[in-house]
Image (cartoon, rainbow, N blue to C red):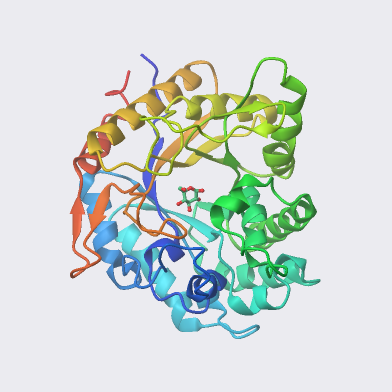
Length: 396
Ligand code: BGC
């Protein structure tokens, strides 16, 4: 039976904009208010985790999970350029303290898709000082990271390079870009060196000020070539993922974020055809994608891998358990073959704002958003806790 390392990290993940609520200084909030119809609904109060994070952390800990991956919101820390908020900094330190009080390992993400509105309104990633501004924010935040072990600098830089298109003003007569439209185009190649430089600048700051292990977490799509389309597959893989893995040189680990697998034909990635097994995000049900991605990235880079996101949007919690069982069984197979995997964080701890709508429910915990924000753990939360207690032995 495959033995996972004794210090294997078992956790769940969230992102600030998707759960905190009232993130009014962020650029995504502005997009949501646009009335353009491109989003089904705005984030609004989200899960009110800005106030209710002690409940979230307690439920995670009580279930037996050992790590909480959450993000710090740049727009709260620096609501206007150069004006840093000590109160918000202390808010995030209180979250770290709350984790530690429960014996939960905090895994910190510094950037999860959203920027302060002042940053985007003045050119966003195309600003001359984009890297410098990000480094200044990271430098300020590093004050509270002195005892943190794991930091993800940028979540899914490749999807961030797609999302950048959302902020472009529509040209005359054209529709504003929706998330689905942004996802259909490949990542903007021009943004790759900028995001990589932001990652490296953040890493330099963190290496000087903390002892944390540092990485970033590209989205992995488990692209598979259809017959005869190997060359196109390589082109697609390089543009969507390869160039982002190149930037991990010198990192301590790579975050793996995996949900589904997509075939690549002569025209590129094939959109998921409608199928009864598709998940609530319309993606093919592919628990095996995680092992494909782990093996692929390990072969490519040989750096330790931390699964920073893996999960399924479903309203059938038994299906969630089946999906994670499949994914973890693949993970164990990869470990048996020598792939170094440090841990597994399920996405997501809570049903949350899925970048435009609350429809796709990824959570281990349901949230009564129409009522008093009560949290109701789903059976999958306790189940994942027992898997964690067995250090994965329950999966085979
Ligand atoms: C992101 C999350 C998102 C999840 C499911 C990842 O792309 O990091 O923010 O909610 O996948 O779509």
